[in-house]
Image (cartoon, rainbow, N blue to C red; front, top):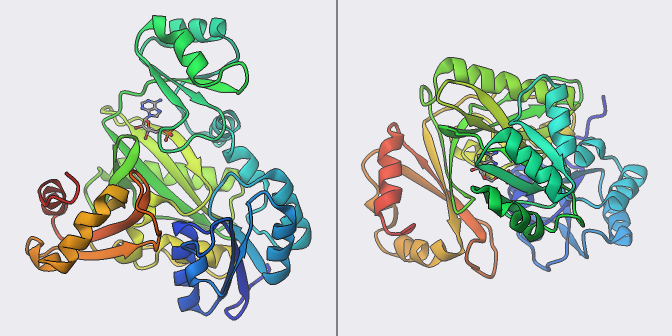
Length: 383
Ligand code: AMP
């Protein structure tokens, strides 16, 4: 098993916040960093030794990154196949490119999840409006039509509530020109996610499930606490994530998003082969964070078992929340929190606070997540 020891340089493809938090943890561990991103002074570039500033699809830039790094990892999944091939040929990419190929495409991803023996919501590949009408008949309404590639934070999706919307949904998502997939709508009670880390030697660790709440299809809060989710459900969710990590031969992290129905059934919604927003709670609330386990996995170091040290609520800071957050920090700030709640504020160093853009997050550590959730509702930053 190849070990990449501290002192070595880790190349990160993608200079966003996930790369930044990876590099901040890795620097603490003694690694050096180089990142590739088209935006100068990117969030990850700011905390790396060096940034190669170029488009993600620029093979010459990928080659430069490869020449500067002992090991390469990625912080987003839409890595161009040509670039992945260059990196694999000219550098060391323990995560490989097969996992990227699988998770870049919803149909391939669903088939891979099923091959791991895990359930997904009923789905069908859609190539025409006739296919779509037939599938709607079969699944009933509502249904969700999604593009097979390129969607995130609810983009590339159309919820079909009435049969007459079929043609409109097909056209709106570019049907005919792009591949589509129809999913049955899951009447879920909660959305959960489990992050699994798998080492080069096949050893798997999973984090406790997070309960995720989305607002406008963007993650708003993730809560983790013992007893929040019944033990048998949490155990099943963790085993599902481990089975997927093993079956897909993951090295590094895989985030598994799931729907929990009232009867206890779990369906996997989608996967992300990288650190995940719903795992940011692990930075302050766990014995080891998702970023550290990812680094340890790709560097061939042993993986400690993560333990939840305290209940936690993670809340995202989007562009529109930055002004009120800064006002809160310069005013009452943490002093205004309910008793027993500690706030850990993480900001990503992004210059422009655009609406809906992920700018940072706060981990609220507390014995009583309900208190933290109540504060989020009423403190004025998120309303
Ligand atoms: P996705 O981009 O697939 O993660 O979907 C974004 C959000 O849309 C999910 O977090 C769910 O809240 C909702 N959603 C997606 N697919 C379904 C489905 N099949 N049934 C119910 N809700 C869904």
